[in-house]
Length: 349
Image 1 (cartoon, rainbow, N blue to C red):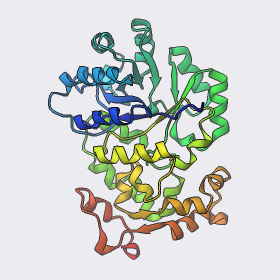
Image 2 (tube, rainbow, N blue to C red; image 1 turned 90 degrees about the horizontal axis):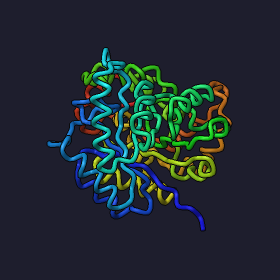
Image 3 (cartoon, one colour; image 1 turned 45 degrees about the horizontal axis):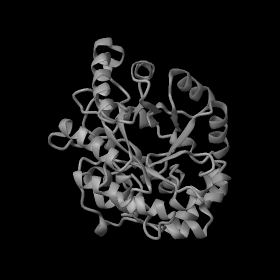
Image 4 (spheres, rainbow, N blue to C red; image 1 turned 180 degrees about the vertical axis):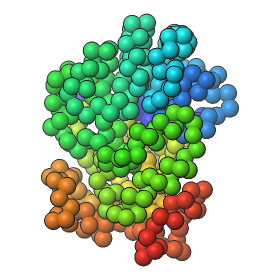
């Protein structure tokens, strides 16, 4: 009997999302959610629901009731002077001990100091390295294993390097997790600074004005270099990947369901943008036809990519045949449009 592929989804601060656990119980491996901001910041900029601190135990209980793992995120990339503060670390670990007694199953962690201490203090808690550990080679992975990590979350920049991921798994003997639908630029030069700003709850605006969208506006075909894994291509990873994670914490519940269904069915018939976590790109692109990518052998061509864009032309073909860019009278309405679109070249508007 073929084992079902399961996905990890993120809690979006909307209690209705918990209903998806009942509906898709056979296809969800875990639900992940951030530690309350009174302890640590987060890797996403989302407003917290009222009484979130009190609601966490209810979230954990709901997961336990349907035999889905609950996972807390300690994924901020910067904590300032608190990054190695023993008193603060004890406060966090004591809180995790309380949640573990209530049924918490795992934690995803960025700070290496926390990894070693939590493994020592709460050995029953499964520890996942955060995507923000940027694990992209065997040496990094072995360091994390020695610290006490049970599951390696692979740097999404190497998502399309299947041989490297297999070698990391072989060298460490650990379970592997892939983040499949994040929309940050490949090898994004802004990524670390952006996550640091989120860790300190700084406004997004300065980064939106000088970040990914400026790169895309100058060369929109780079959107296809973003290392997402389409639902149709999940089959190439099943033999060596233990967990597939969907970036959904900033999605409305309806979009979480749309994304989850696409990956369960391993097919997205419409707009690729509907299932990718790339809000800023939606202000530049109207539509990307995922089925056209299939017809143009997207996965196979991306495996052969040598970054020789001047002589290749494949991504330019994708842009012409699969993508529709926004025009001046079709700009989407969102709070960031004015910021994004002042960087879009006039001839594309």
